[in-house]
Image 1 (cartoon, one colour):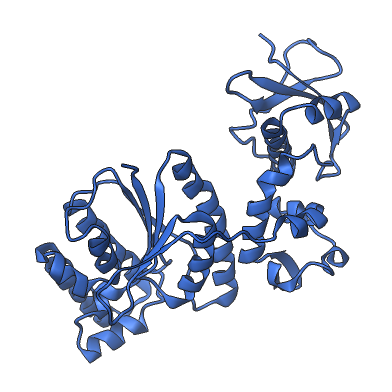
Image 2: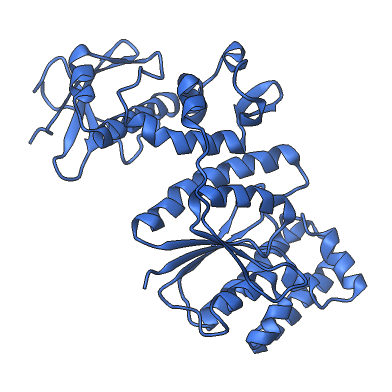
Amino acid sequence: QMPNLILSTCGTSFFTNGLNAEERILVNKYSNEKDKKTIPKEDLIKLESIIRATHNQAQQADFNDITRMSAELNALVRFYKFNTFSKQDTHILLCTDTWLCEEATKIVEEYIRRKGCNQVIIYRQNDLRTDNLQNFHLALTEIVKWVDENILSYREKKYYIVFNLTGGFKSVHGFFQTLALFYADEIIYIFESQKELLRIPRLPVKMITTEVVEKHFTVFRAFSLGLDVDKKDLESIPNSLLFEIDNKYSLSPFGELIWLQAKRQLYEKELHPSPHKLIEFSEDFKKTVNNLPSDQKGIINERIDDLVLFITTQKNINSLGFKQLKGNPRPPSTHECNAWSDKDARRIFLHYEGEKLVLDSLDKGLH
């Protein structure tokens, strides 16, 4: 049987279910607090007492008890049909950037481990709090990147991807339902008053994204690389795909989503023009790359992105392996970097002309 990767959005239901009115008001008051050090001592003592009591209750709870205590675990217990959690599964618990949410999520983690599954990862997303809308938008954009990088790697390992959206904050749910259309095989949740687990299989939905991205490819690529974009180039891009802070633009969470959906397909299509004025391609390099199979074209476009980041941030990314050639083995090239390292490994050979980097050729590495 295929293992499951289950991503659960987590909230503070552990601390609100079963509390009296005064305690619930206290929890809600500090629900957006990032660090417990900022909470007045008297209130902190009360909150830590609530956390301890909840933790102790959860340790003693059987499956029926826990379904009343935690929204997240209510769905998971029903997913596993009130049996031991599968040890071959992996759980990712996404919590907001707040102290109380992380404490509640740790109790969820401990319960999953105690019920048989040790593969549990807590992911706390910076700025995923609703007290600052700008930061919240940026946090959602980061989540899109994180989901794209991490969840797809599990799919490649033949995991069945489940999004458990029963717990967590409503502000996050709507967005994750959209993400699930592209990354999950199934969504599970329980309506608050119901005991039945609602299971929604992956819908055959495909956003008409490639056309929009292809039409404005240089703009989307520049945004993804953190490069400046001319405001007049944004005029025909739908507003829902852009996010503005202090007259500076970036991709909105949905903009990032459609870029990542279209990027692979477009990168594998051809060698795209250089995204930066300080990177140039020789005719020989262009010809060689455009004759490659599509997956290798995609890798070269990714490596060029790495070179842009190297030029703009001076960070030599591990996957790039940029270094100077010893001696003068293949003029005019003075430097080399990785293209790909598996199977028939290749290197990109290049040289500087002033500040510019000219990509000369793609070939086997030198021994």
